[in-house]
Image (cartoon, rainbow, N blue to C red; front, side, top):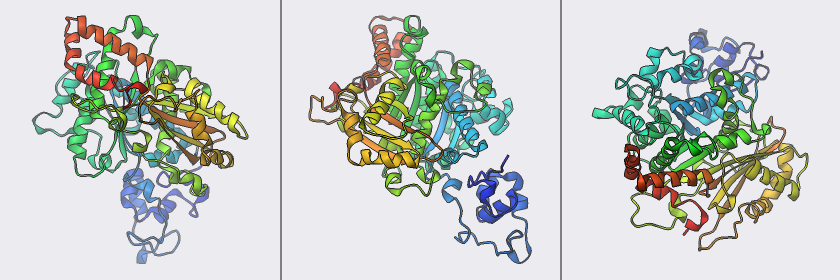
Length: 531
């Protein structure tokens, strides 16, 4: 297999040097930290002393640190400005993190330039769990880190030394208490033991938590760790706060959780509400919808079946495809430096993917906080060779109906952000429809977002961006729709409301304690709640 430099992602045929060591020495000799991190086994050989400071391969004097004589991929080497610090919480979150890492590895092993999406998009990552057995089964533990059980306990366990490491079951309150225990007596697990370097969190554009809200760990622990990360790691020393996102798997309507899954539904309501206090935006994924999407948005992820449970192997593929598109939206410089700049200039940063609730929400003077925005995820694909208005309408329909990744009504959304991306030869044509407003007009039309149907003074905002992506054959439409009505969330809310009103159990009491947060979040959903 052709060698690939994992620092600059250049293939062997793109080097002027004959070996990987010679290439690293010539191209990255002024970046010892990057070489140490990516190729620790080659460091001694790369930085071996040569007479008179000459490079043994080229015969030229090696550049001094900071010199621009030898071009380097600085943006790839440093964590600063990369899109995400990714944190997988609980079993579902660990599985999704594995799927992302295996997708990155698949692209790199196949020498695809899209590998740079993840190389340039991840400032850092790490899993957290209360269940050490689940952690032991992950790709992260087995191959990314080579961890034993004893390694996992200090580096990845929630509630270190406070339980038997067998998980939190369906008890979100236990997940919450175990996470809180990690911060007792002034402890700082971010800096003292977890696989999460505080400087890399600070360097990232945003933090993305991935987890579920049906069981105990992801549901109970995520809001606590998000709060502590914001307060202890990020602090208030920046003018523009770093946005925190939560990609969360919610109970599906019409599944095992419908008639007999009261505990999972209540966990879902409470988990979403508590998370909405701690993060800025929540992206809910519905397993029913992930299972139903078309095969053309299920990316290749080699060896995924070795590390993800069988029931999640296929549904995690479109979820990763969505996150990959989200990641590339603000790191185009890692994709194709020769792409059309008029198209490349339309990229956006994480906070541009939504509008805060306070911008459009009818203010409630009694509310103790402003909840996170719910972002309904969509991802469509068109195999057309040429594009006109009709073909673009089909693509929008494919994204908003056939391939939406959670169940929702687009005509009730407060607005949305969309990204069109594909190969240069097709995007040249598509870009004209973006530039003249045709694509915005289509998405805003009655059959889709129905942007003209608003009762108040606030408008439905639709933002359409575009991006050239090499090594793709087709045009894709990625999007987030803000605060729409979602049947599965409504079903969960109604179940929790009945429990609050009529229940006498400990579970019912827990719901009552969190009800202010539940009301704050759910009273925002749907266009009728716009100011």
